[in-house]
Length: 634
Image (cartoon, rainbow, N blue to C red; front, side):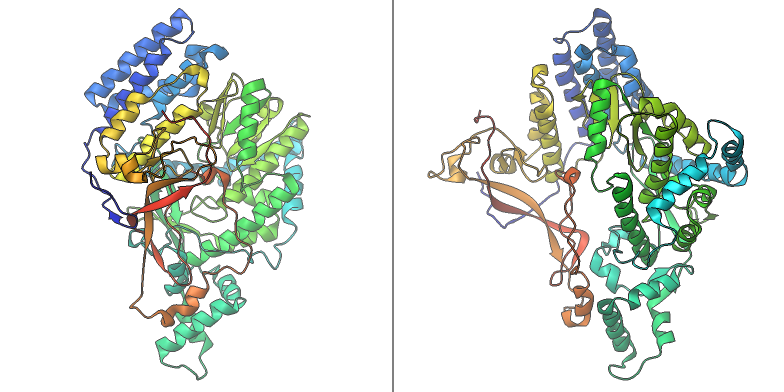
């Protein structure tokens, strides 16, 4: 068999069946229900489960997206609990049905319809914010003045937020500003020029009129950035050493643009998620506010927005003992109304956020919409701001109900003691938000938060197929995700996905299947996870080891995406100062624990190597793994 040498380029694309997702789904159902029939549960639950299996298999045979959409509401956690019961012995049956409903839930079957629904939802939420701004805010204001349950609750929340933020934004609020990882109004993400180098070097910078003075001030305070722009301007004007016209300089650096661009990104097969793509310098400044808010919220309230672990731990405790409730909001990012922020935030902070936001957006059809909300997803400070508002509401609810127990807020993933749940729901709805009943749980054995799902303390997070399978890396990722799912489920369940794994391996070319495999690791899309013993022709007679030999380093062949270097006309010295801006002078950010194992693109580049987003090539590399203990090879 042909051997792939280390360093060789690999063709990523494969010719795969168009219905491969259905084939995998059908085999996964067979693997799940084969074991569920052996588990201990009531006769009624068995009959109900068998009927559901027959319906799902019929949908797979017909390849019917409409029927799949129709059955998904019956496979939500709340409906499954009602069907199988709350006993711990039915945890496996709960997982089987939960996984069956989740596997293709995010697959892009109907991308066009999902986009249209997302835009319709965006407009409906905007209408709701408008109603709150004009009329509905009067309800919470009146109850705050007269009702016993909500008397002075707004003053209480305002004082709590003011303690976190301070009266006015500090002078160093933008000291931690940075460019975002996504597209901006002036760039097209398909070009790949959204990495940090292009954010600095592609001129002019787009910025709103209100944020322009702040942008000039931030650039003028950074001598490296100002020097790079000065060199760019002098070369453009052919004036290397003479005095320059500052007004002309700044007019060439900035382009005033007061609109964001509304777009959609995949969420599920039913509906996409809307985002606002904003001007580049606005996002830069917004992320400075975001990082400041994160530090202050963590310091004063203990809600760490750089770590989801505490939320996940609380969800586990809540499912085990039932004393904590998990709460999720519907369209939270798009329902932070302007009047809500004006009521709760200190005036100076509210004024700053108004200066940094985009007041209007251009819809996909070309219409202009003036926003009734403070911001939406795509704005750099949205996540931290909604956490601040929801955190103040949670703390007020806990105090007023005299609840005892931990609480946590991570965006719109909220955890509170059960005794504070009802009051918090009322308060949030009075502030213009709406609770997502399908994802909020105050009773029963199930809890979910921040990507972790638990049933009686047992992790039952399902596997989602969220994108089309097109290349070798996609198949590696799918295979290894199923492999890891089998590994993390309780061993007492005896789950065996061997048929599903064999089906996926069938579509991987033999050369990659036989050479690129090794023990489980955090990298899910570079080689096949396996308990097999290495073959001598690939590893040599001097290394007759199998996975699980303690104290022995193993060599594994991987298919790794490598960023393709980009050179602008081959003249590095023309953009050297912009390259230097990519070297951070501050502390390096630590990697986030929950991102381990996620599919990530190669590095954003550095002073010497410039990369474009998605401009990658797949190469075979040879790596030595550290000591690894696991099952002896079989």
